View 1 (tube, rainbow, N blue to C red):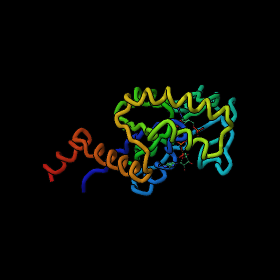
View 2: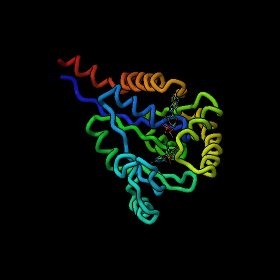
View 3: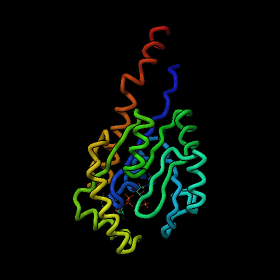
View 4: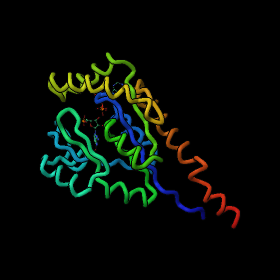
Length: 204
Ligand code: ADP
Ligand code: 5GP
């Protein structure tokens, strides 16, 4: 029996409204070796969002306490709110051989890529700036002021896309999910992660 592989960290970023949540939901349906990290945030829940499923919604004081205690793998401030990844859940899943998706902004991704350089990183681009604005507005979840801040942030974020290992365009969400699925499969087959299998075959 071949040894179980360790899980991989999969960092997914992209401008707010580009369709990360939509694509990740489709991706989760394509594989059974993935789980999604639920982030902590100080922002208010949007209609329909559930505490513990979409985010852990906490006060700024609680967020700062967790940062000070070293309980977050990474954290960042985005458009006036704090966001962070609970460390323990991620470490436990990776040990169990389950890969973990982190849907985080570019500041958080930079922290993860420097502390865990073997993470798989994917930047999801919208097909155009006009389409991004249409999607952000179509979601009906943000004020005009927040939409403007998110569009400004989008320009800064897209400029960082080249730092990621992969860029996927979300024109068709299904096609984007299939591309990320292929990326994960290829990453898991890299020889660097499978040389132990060669030894096992040779001694069996
Ligand atoms: P994000 O998680 O990046 O903020 P969402 O997944 O919430 O983005 O998507 C933003 C809006 O765009 C939603 O209304 C969603 O239904 C829509 N959307 C996502 N992907 C596509 C796509 N490929 N084509 C058209 N609309 C999309
Ligand atoms: P939203 O408010 O639209 O849910 O998220 C805003 C931004 O915060 C998105 O770019 C999203 O990827 C990012 N984000 C969500 N969770 C985290 C997290 O745990 N850490 C970081 N750094 N960014 C996050």
